[in-house]
Image (cartoon, rainbow, N blue to C red; front, side, top):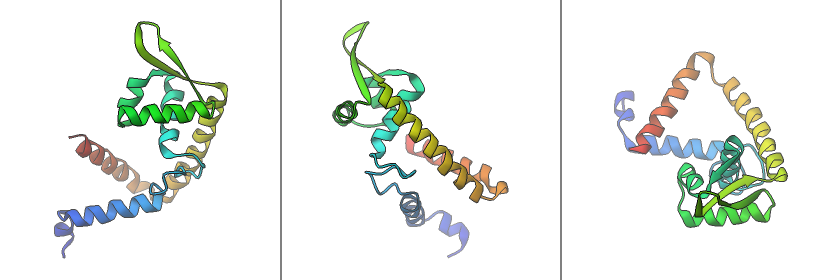
Amino acid sequence: MSSDRRADDPVVLQDALGSFVRAFGLHQPETTPCGRPIPVSEAHALSELAQEGELRQVELTRRLRLQKSTVSRLVRQLSARDWVERAPALDDGRGVVLRLTPAGRRAAQNLVDARRERFSRLLDSIPAHERAGVLHALDVMVEALDE
C-alpha cells in the first residue's frame, strides 16, 4: 500500500494511536505516564486546580471532559487524600468551588516536576527538525476530536 493510501486508511490511524497510547502508558489508568502512582484523571484534576488556584466543580467537569458523576467521584477521591477542599460558591448556593490543600499543592508540584522531566526527555528524543510537525499533528488531532 502506498504511503498516500495508508494516510487515508482509518485502521492505520487506529493502529498508530493504539501504539502511542501503549508507548506513553495511557493504557495504565492507575499510574500517570510520568510514573506517578495516582490515576491519570486525578493528575489532570490536580493540574487544572494548580493552574487556576480554584475552580467551580462544573468548570472542572468541562475542562476534563468527564461526566458530572465521574467528577463528583473524582473530587471525593481527592478529598479523601486531603488534596482538595470543597467550599460553597459565594455567588451561588448550589455551586461548589474546589481548591487544593497544602498537601494537594505539593502533590501537584511533584506531578509538574515529573511531567517536565518526562517531556524534556521525550522532546530531546524527537529530531529538532520534526518537533514542529509533531506538535502540529497533535493540534490537528485535538481539533478533529472537538468536531
